[in-house]
Structures are given as structure tokens and as C-alpha cells.
Image: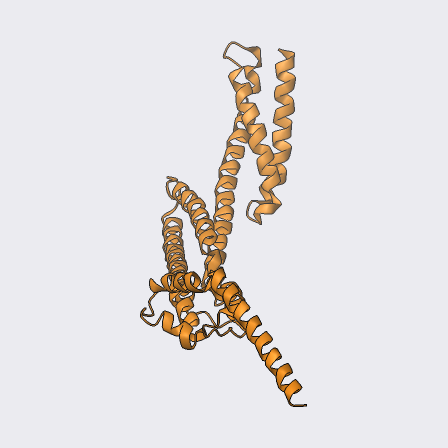
Length: 295
């Protein structure tokens, strides 16, 4: 029994010391007595457990004196006071957090790309605040004044939150509309000048490779845009080859394939080159003969 008695006396002394440290500061800043209050919570809990070990027939029941019981009542009152003040302090921080998030969203320089993450962060902050508010408002010991003040804070903060979420929704809609507009906006002409092709087969492969690199393989361009570029590059005979096709998105690949089928004919290219060689040789021979007879 001496072991229980020693433990009781030690706990009772610690509680008394801690209570005397905390009591003078309970009307001051919470930070000045929060450490002692948390310590009292722990000691008070240990003492209640020890009370259960003392039955009525135990010689140590004399330890539960009037002074001790009064001390326990005073400590319990202080702990309840601390619990309320701590919740008020925590609620104030949660209110400030929600207000700061709302202010960020409502700022002129708010980045619309952060809309999704800010919505999630704001909703989470609101849930924490609302949960604590309901807990405090459900406390039967809360005064009518505190209840009215708490509900006013709730109403004002809810209005700010809904306004901020509405702003995020609005900026998201504007951002998506701009993205669609940018996708549908005409792409500027390449800075490199586009080649021309008039149907001369000897120039086809050079034209084809350059046009294909600049326009045909450009994924940023729509087919209707590619067709306009192609039409602007063709002249004379080459342009006549696709003149029967209307300038539509569906007709671009038809026109491009048609030109490739005609001018990709390697045999025609070889024949043209051979003809040009013979023409050069013939002109050279005539020049030599003319020079010989002219002597």
C-alpha cells in the first residue's frame, strides 16, 4: 500500500505545483499557460486512474481528502477552460487560413493554372474549420453571445469561400476558351519562303522535299491550311493538275497524292533528263559545225 500512497502523494504534489503555475496566467495569452495546462491534463488523467485503485476499505482512502478533491475540481475547471481557449485559438488560425486562400484566388495576378489545386486546398481548409465550428457550437456550455459570434464568422467565411470558388470556375472557363481559340487560330506562315513549282519535272523532287518538310509534315497546320499553301505554290501546268478540286480540308490529301502520282514517275524524270542531254549535245554539235563552215 505504501507504493500506492507514494505514487499518490507524488502525483498530488506535481498537480498542485503545476496548477499554481498555470492559474495566474489563465486570463492572459494562451501561450503563457498552455504548456502547464497540457501537463495538468496528463497528471489529472493519471490521478483519476489511481483513484480507481483506491476502494472504500483501503486504508489509503484517507488520501482523498477534501483539499485533494477541491484541487482536482479546480484542475478540471482549468482544463476545461484551456480546452475552450485552445479551440478558439485553433479556430482563429483556421479562419485566417481560409481567408488567405480566398485572397490569393481573388487577386488580380492569380494564376488560372492553379485553379484545381487551390480548389482542393480551399475545400480542405473549409472542412477543418467547419468541423471545429460544429464541435464548439454543440458544446452545451457555450454562451449565446459566443454562439451568435461563431455563426456570424461561419456565414462570412462561407460567403468568401463560395465567391473564391466561383472565381476559380470562371477563370477555368476563360482559360479553356482561350485554349480552344488558340487551337483554332490560323498558324502564321513559316519564315522560310515557300518554293514554287510550275510543272517542270526536273524541279519536282526539290519542290516536293521542301514543301513536305515545311508544310505537309507540319502537325500544327490543318489540312485546309496546307491546301491553301499548296495552291499558292503551284503555277502553270502544275496548278492545272488540281484545278478541278475545291479548296476544302478533305481535298488536300487528294491533291497532294495526285501530284505525287504524276511527278513521282521516275521514268518521266529520266526521259526528261535524257532529252535535255541530247538537246545540249545537239546544240553543241550545231555550234561546232557552224563554226567550221564559217571559217
